View 1 (cartoon, rainbow, N blue to C red):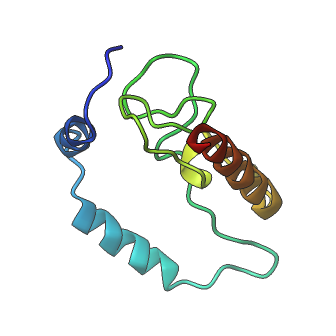
View 2: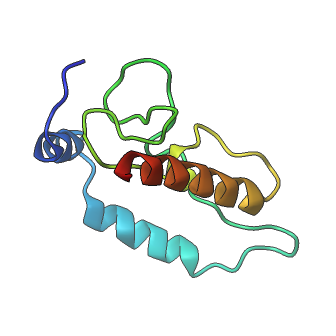
Length: 106
């Protein structure tokens, strides 16, 4: 897949038909509900890791496909979530992606 600009990636996101304002309202409504005892809330799979060269996915390095310098270091890059909390895994992944980005800046 040929590299595209960040603007082209944004246009592709807009073409998906998702209205970010409505999504934000839905998230805020969901956030107003307290999780039950022993549970937690983690949002994920927005821009999942994928080995296939597909638009709106991330490479194993965390880089958003079709961009030069957009890296995803949170749960948005996970293709699915386990039933239990994964805070440590999310922090470890963010650290891994951040270290890789830092090495490219040297």
